[in-house]
Length: 87
Image (tube, rainbow, N blue to C red):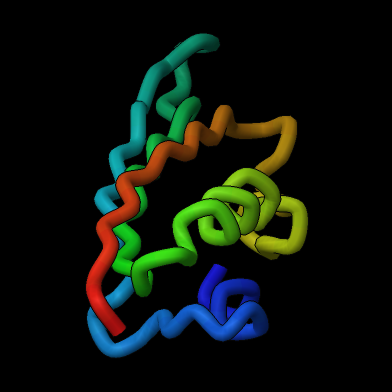
């Protein structure tokens, strides 16, 4: 995600992107496994960059190695909160 933001001149560091991540562990066939991962991203962007950031967040998982590896095996839920600041 950071690379996609930076490519659009939206700084991702320091402290501009963070996430709260929670996993759900269940035993559907008697063996424990992670069945769901919920990711809540907190993104700070310059004023006027909210729409671009929203577009990045809606599609970044297509290029995310972790999301692509887990696709079909673990339900991944993404949500976000965008905060703006004066650049």
